[in-house]
Image 1: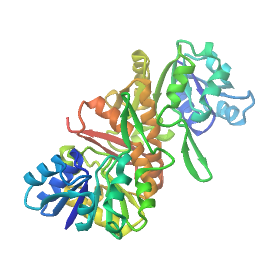
Image 2: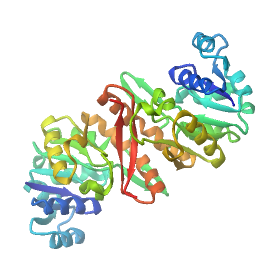
Image 3: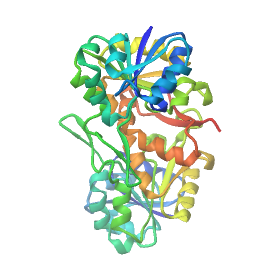
Image 4: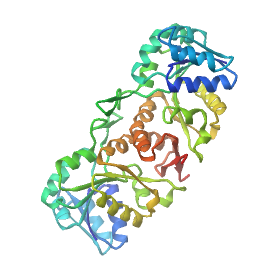
Amino acid sequence: MRYAVLGTGEVGRTLGGKLVDLGHEVTLGSRSKDNPAALEWARDAGAGARSGTFEEAASSAEVVFVAVGGRVALSALEAAGAANLDGKVVIDVSNPLAFEDGQLRLDPVESDSVGEQIQRAFPHARVVKSLNTVNCKVMVEPTLVPGEHQIFVCGEDAAAKEQVTALLGEFGWPPHRVLDLGGIRSARAVEMALPLWVDLFRHFGHGEFNMEIRSAR
Amino acid sequence: MRYAVLGTGEVGRTLGGKLVDLGHEVTLGSRSKDNPAALEWARDAGAGARSGTFEEAASSAEVVFVAVGGRVALSALEAAGAANLDGKVVIDVSNPLAFEDGQLRLDPVESDSVGEQIQRAFPHARVVKSLNTVNCKVMVEPTLVPGEHQIFVCGEDAAAKEQVTALLGEFGWPPHRVLDLGGIRSARAVEMALPLWVDLFRHFGHGEFNMEIRSAR
């Protein structure tokens, strides 16, 4: 499969690296063609790894990962070009997270979400929100954390969620640990779980944890 | 111990009933002296059960539970009277949750929380936020849900958190399953987990679930 990973931070490089290791072709997309992090990644990540602009990455891909910060997700996707997203599965792993004056802020929050913003702005993209509730090491290697902890998916397109569930299986998340929350509106819920993630990060002193939802029946 | 439980809804009555069953004296507090739900509860709940106004409940109590809706928590505590809260452990189990036109809304959210509002308004109360991440059945009977799922506490007063941890032990939460998130600011994180709770409620079709945080180390 041909993937675009938009975003050259740790999340983008980790997702891209895992996809290459799995045998996929990956273009790591950034705002400029000469992004040093992207060039270095493409040089070192393996045979299937390339770098390019957001537009180059999206145009060549069958599936697009949004791995930029949530607050710049729309502008990255606009740079990628709506025509390059039409009909494609767009996996939004972002969080609208910023630290301002040492304070955690989320924007949008509660009345909207990045996942919904993307689906509204690109109505022909098949947006699936997933993976944003764990750090990027756990995203691609869930066995780092013991137990039957889960990953969430939500989105409007059932076939797109199935495709993402299959990819999550390649990452190491078996289908019974992929919890479908429903439509893209549930992006609000998973994005609003971030402050708890941050407090737990402070509690444990590291980011290698996840939640296992236990139910009475 | 003498407890006030402010709020006569299902949460208040369930907490009050459990406290009575544990041998404590409980006054279920409401806005008016003749609240039918409170009178009925006091008649049926057992020897240690009484009902009264918010003020009567708080004045006679050593520990005060805030079990009204989060959006009316401050007005309930104002009715209880600041002098009746001074130096006392105040356990805030509320969520600032409302459904408006079928939409879930949280207010305050992200930049503030009910827990913080209470601590600011009553600086001599020893506020501990806890229990708001599970439904009231699970609050008082955690074994309804399998596994080593946890309950959170946060607040500024370490001794108050210890006292709440001991009470949680009476409810059935052993100390190793009480996860201290830090200061009262973490009330934001646990209150913002509510939309995920609501989506999981929709997913499971019931409210008897909880999260078990799994950590790599």
